[in-house]
Amino acid sequence: MMHNTHFTQYIPPTAMHYVTGTYTSVAGEVAGTIAINRAAANSTALINIPITVPSNSVALQGAKLAKIEIDYEHFTAEPTSMTWTLNKVTRGADGAVAVVTAVTKSNTLSAGTGKAVDEHREVITITTPAFIDDDEYYLLELSMPSGAGGHTFHMLGAVAYFTLKG
Image 1 (cartoon, one colour):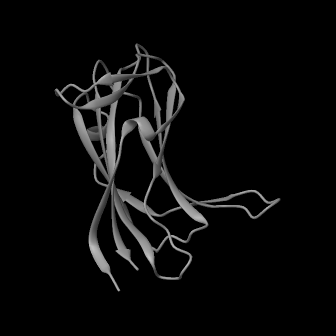
Image 2 (tube, one colour; image 1 turned 135 degrees about the vertical axis):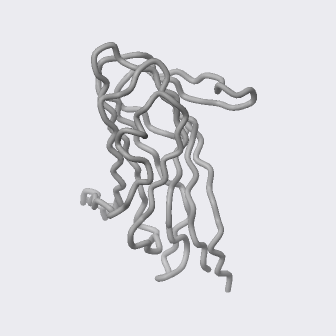
Image 3 (cartoon, rainbow, N blue to C red; image 1 turned 180 degrees about the vertical axis):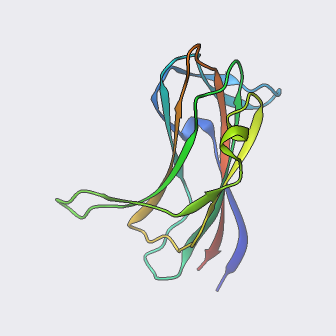
C-alpha cells in the first residue's frame, strides 16, 4: 500500500471557470508562462478553481487535500477586497441535486496584503483535511469586487498539495 504525503497537482489558469468579467488568455509577465488576464472593470470578478486531485470509493484512500497555493498578480489598481471560499461538492444521486458544504480553512495573506498591486501567492490551508470520496470534489472560489477605476488582474495558476493513499 502506498502512503505518500508529498503529492502536488498543478492547476493551470486555463482550467479555471471565470464567471464574471472579461478575460483573455495571455502570455505571463515572465517568458514561457501563461496567464488569464482580467481587463480593467468596475465589477465583481468571480473565479472558480476546480481542485483536481484523485478520489476513491474506498474509505480513507485516494487524496487527502491539505492546502492550495494560488499565484496571481494585480496590476493597475487594487480590488476593493478578495474573498476565498472553499466548497466541498457532493454529487447528487440520479434525480437529486448536488450538496455544497463550506470547508473550514485559513489564508496566509492578510486582506490588505493580498489585494495590493504586486505578485502574490495565497496559501489556503484546510483546517481538518479528509480523504475525498469518489462522489465529492472541491471548488475554490475567489470573489473580487473592483472599486472606481477598476483594476487589471492575472491568474497564473494554482497547486494543490495532498496525501495519496491507496
